Image (cartoon, rainbow, N blue to C red; front, side):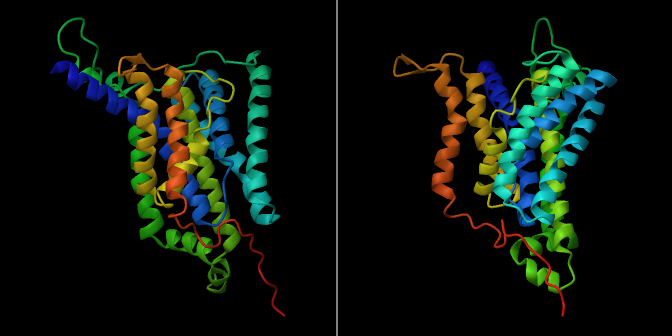
Length: 319
């Protein structure tokens, strides 16, 4: 019985550990796309956050300051996407792809400049888990139930709080109403005196800030170092969660937990066996990406995006 309970606790914590960077990034993407700007650059913004989180922790010796620097750096990086798409009305998908490539190359370049390596940075101080914060230590003998229950990062709780805060902000406030109006019908919003460009800037920058937080979670909570392209497609999985969740923070959260469960299975089943046949771990590692394709194939046609998503808007001059 204790073994079953331990396995369930391990599976739940692993699921939320894997889901956290997904739903934080997905919620950020919702702000951008609800404002009418497609944000394929979430992957690159996560990379920037992961890198500068490590840089901040390395130079300040504080993981929390590293987390703050990661959020700021990704927010600044997102301004590039906002300017290209909102001010210059460029193709939003092309801009996102270009920024992903820029982030991938830039982080490797800066990794070489700052750490003298091209693969993995030096290990840095990490954000302590809840059991360390509350001073709960692993028992040498006896039950470790409380230790196992608290063996997760506080960033997970921060992320969950952000999901519900985002839901309130989007659907219960004037700011959220204006943001959604810009994404649904920019011309009508402009007619009512809402600044379309300003709201779109807000949406994209918020997406960058949250993607930076998700990236910092990868480097400062899961690994303690930066590795080349360590986001490993999570930004795109977050986009899939956002679409599956119908551009709703709660829906994106649920979808992210499902994707997180697929990733958690890799850690909970070391050598899975099906009908007496050992399944290679590589197949378990493929599950999140296969699930992404399956979910998109089944749900993308049923999800209705904001009507003005991806459409540049230029304010008409009055005669």
